[in-house]
Image (tube, rainbow, N blue to C red; front, side, top):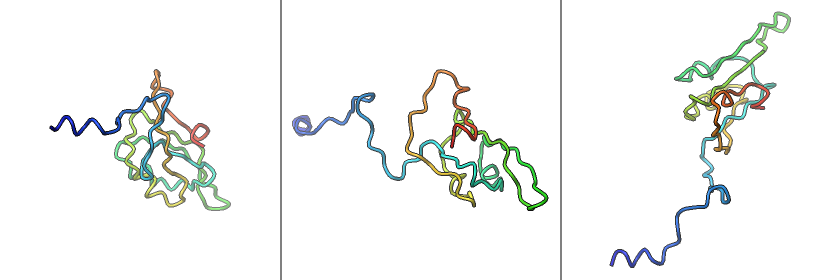
Amino acid sequence: MITLSYINRLPVTIQYPYEKLIISEHFRGRIHFEFDKCIAGEVCARVCHIDIFVDDWRLETDIRKKRLLNYNIDFGIYIFYGNCVEYCSANCLSMTKKYELSTYDRHELNYNQISLG
């Protein structure tokens, strides 16, 4: 009897490369980084539990603000928990819906300010 109840159900599987998944609005995919908005507060680097953020900045003495020079994120070890996006005071980080990050070379998972923007 249990088997007969499953006959009328639609299939759950999708044909992946040809059909894409329907993503929830709360899905946490790859980070989008807006380099121009960043104030180099380093809050994202402090709340990150696995230290994937590498940033270089310089202090502009005439305007008394930090200027971000370089920023790298290694998605090979990033776990997509989203604390860095939540605590960013400048709102320069956001989560996208991109989930296709697979690659044959793990060095391609290192993103900098040019490839994340």
